[in-house]
Image 1 (cartoon, rainbow, N blue to C red):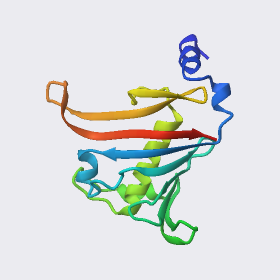
Image 2: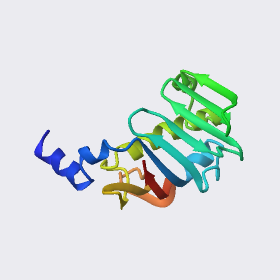
Image 3: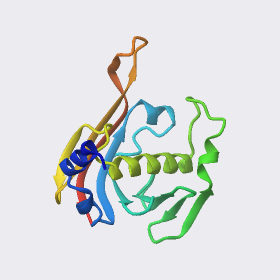
Length: 174
């Protein structure tokens, strides 16, 4: 590894320590214009989330309604009851976005795929540039806040409205 990468990993808790954990459990709230545009404003208020660290898998508990969980995996996304009974699923979910525009609204499986994919990356790469606040959890610096803004035509940030806001709390590493 390069000296810079070693420094980054060391400052976030070391790769050796990171590899000891299998999952990250958090409470999460997301908001912003993106979710409104896709037809899901307010759906991510204080939800429970579990992401795996050794496989690409995300589970939201009480996803879009009480008693429903979403499970994201790269080639399959599904909704189940809390006790594991299948409600609906989509195989090869990325293909379901073909032909979409910025204005295209999403169904629950689109939402489960996109949010599961995105938050898995945010939490499994805590040293990346897209999170702005961190908290030390069991020796690992974990992200707790993200704000994404649109850009003005001159390239400056338009901070008048949040495109995507993420607030993470109650983090547990297992």
